[in-house]
Image (cartoon, rainbow, N blue to C red; front, side):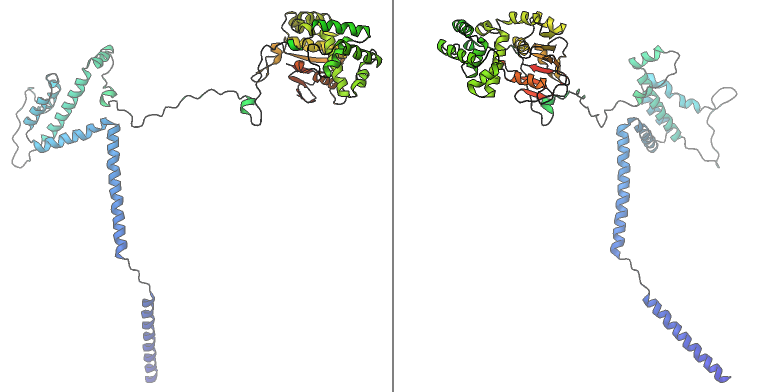
Length: 473
C-alpha cells in the first residue's frame, strides 16, 4: 500500500508538470494584438472631420433655407427678441412702456389687450389689488409672459400696417363678407430665383431634302428653262437663189431636193450655199443613176459606202421634208404657224384634245412641232399622248417638267405600233424611233430621250416610261 501511494503521488506530480508546460506553451503561441498609437490618432482625426462636416452642412442648409424662405426668419427673430428682453429687463411695466413706445399711434389699441388678461374676476366687476404672497409661497416670474405679449403685439401691429396699405385695403373692402386673411406675398416677399430657367430656341421647321443637293453619290443637275433661239441661225439658212436652183435641178433629174440637200449636209457642207450649180447637177445625176427614186438608202450608201452616212442622210431628208424648203430659208420660227396647221390637219398624226388645244394656242415650241412632223414623215404614223395639258408640274421633287414650258412631248405610238410592250433592244419600234431621234442635227438634238432603252447621248431608261417615249428640249 505504501508503494502504491508513492507511485500515485509520483504520477500525479508528473501529470501536473506536463499540464503546466502545455498551458505555458499555449500562452506563448497565442497572438498578441496590439493597436498602434498612429491608428488611434487617425481614427480620432477622421471622426472629428466627420462631425465637423456634418455641423457645417447643417449650418449651410439653414442658411439656404433662410435665403429661399425669408418668412422662416420670423421665429428666430422672435426668439432673439424674447431672449434679449428677458436678459435686459426684469420690470414688467418698463417692458410694456418700451413696446408701446415702438408702436405707432394707430397700433396702440392691440397692445392694450395683454394687461386686461391680468385683471382678476370679482363679483363687483372691479379690479382687485394684487395679493401679497405669504412667507411660505414663492413669487412667480411674470416677466417672460410680458415679453412674449409685447412681441406678439409688435407682430400684430406690423401686419395691421401692411393691411392698411391702399392696394390691400381696396381688395379687402371689395369683399365685405370674406374673412380677413393675410396675403402670402406680405409674409413671403418675392425673391429672384437662384437658378434661372434655360431659354431654348424654337425648333426649326423640317425642310424637304432635295436629291440633287443632299443625297450622296447624286450629281446636281440644274435645268434652266428659257426661250430657245431659232434652230436654224441665219448663217445656216439657205440663200433663196440656191434654194430655187436646188429645187429646179433636182426636179430635172427626178431626184428629191431634200435628199440632195441631205447628202450635202451629211458631207459637212454647212454654209448658206453648200454647192454650186455644177456640183448639184453631178450629185443629182449620180443619185438618179443609183435608183434614188425607188430606194434612197442604198443609193446614198453607194456614194460613200458607210451605213452611218446613209442613216444620217435619210434622217436629214425626213426632217427637211417635214418642215419644208421655205423653213430652211427663212427659219423655223417663221414656219411655226405653217407647222401648226400642218400637224393639226395631218391624218398621220394623232393628238389628244388637250394637246391640240395647246398647239392651237401656240404654246408648243417649234422644235417639238418639227419633231412630231419628223417622226410622222419617217414612220408614216405617230400618236402624241401628252404635250402640256394633263401633265403634272414637277418631274421630280424640286424640278419643273419640260412639258410645262412646251418643250417636251410624249409619244405613245409610232408607225401604228404602241410603245407599250414593244421596247425590246433588238429592232423594236422603240429602238428605231429613239435611233431616228438621235440622228437629228445638232441644232435639233433633244436634251432628254427617255424610254426603257438607253442608246447613248441624251437617251436613258426610266422604269415609269414603259408605255411612251419622252422627248424633251
